[in-house]
Every structure is written in structure tokens, then in C-alpha cells.
Length: 255
Image (cartoon, rainbow, N blue to C red; front, side, top):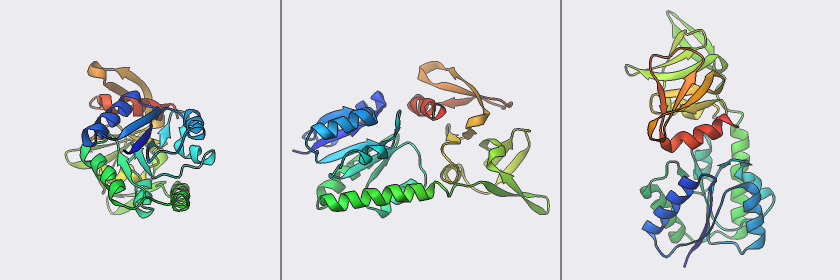
């Protein structure tokens, strides 16, 4: 019987993940659901290492990579993340699987089957892979876009990311709007921009909007557990954040 541990600070997400795991394989035993760095460090110090760990990268009290500085987790790790960013390439390169939130059954089943089909990593190899992953992410943090070159008549002008209040899709065109309400058209998709912009400064609110942290005026409670993001500049429509992403939004605002 496979024994697993979930490290996830969002109760709803942890419950959903556990339910999906049991739907895929009812024999998998979830030994514990841990919600913080300190709780995780204490648990791994006091208990035998499980067969597999599902670990959220961004916990309320910091990056889960801090756990590896305190304890040696020798089993394979399946990381979960709400950000479709540069780090995902590092997971693939280093053969550590990842799940992008919100987690769906197909991706989870792929990760579990990958663990079952592949030979278990030795403790030394697993530690080496995690160290490479952390190094890749630290190096990647310096690679976010600071400027975009945008067309203006017969010229290309630099647009600093710090001057962008939000980016949206309008009539199938992607436009960045500055704090002065000037509009700049970008030749890339929101998916591409989500990877290129620093997730500490920008948030993918929904399919139509990426918002800048310093542009956020306040958050308003909406029906069905959703939230409205109000910016410091005028928008033609409401920016609605789904119930699934509300916890992620709150955590991003509190970073």
C-alpha cells in the first residue's frame, strides 16, 4: 500500500486533492495533511518518510522549499503550484513531477502512474534533483521581463512593467494599460505573459485579466464565494475572481 503526505495550506484544495487521489487509487493511504513549513518540518522529523509527497510550493508562511533546509525528504515529491511560470520547465528537466492548480484528475493520475511505473529514486538522487530544482528557480527569478518593446506608429518604444496597471484581452487583442490610462498593444498571449511577468508583482485574475499588485485598490466580496478586484484606475468592466482562485488571490496580496 502506498503511503502519501499532502503539504497544502488551503483546506479546500487539500480536501479536493485527497478526494481525487482516492478516486484514482483507493488503496493510497494519506498519512497526514500538513499546512505550514513548521508543521511539516516537525512531522517529517517525527515520522518515517512516506512513499510519496504532494507539496504546494507557496505556503502561507513561505516557500515550501524551506522545509528541505531543515529535514531530508528522500521520497519522490510531486509539487503543486498555482503559477504557470518558468519553474515548471525546471520540474520537467529534473524529472520531478508537478501539478498546476486547480488540479484535475487526468494530471493527477498521470503523476501517480509515473511514480508507480518508474523505479523509485534513491535518496541521493532525490536530494540532488531537489537541489537542482531550487537552483533553477533561484536563477529564474532574475529572468522576468522588465520591459516590453511595443509598436507606436513607425517606432518601437520600451514599456516598463512597473508602469503597467493591468493587461487584458479586448476584441482578441492583448493590451497593457498604464496608470495614466495609456494603451499599449502586445504581440503575445496572456498565457505567455503569465510566464514572463514576475508573479510577485502580477496576478492572473481570470482568463481576460492580469493585474499589477500596486494597482489594486481593494477587494470586494461577491456572490457564490467570488471576489471583485477594484483597481486604482477606471476599468470598463468588473474583474471577477472565481471561488477557486480567491485563496490564491488573498495569499498573493499578503505576500
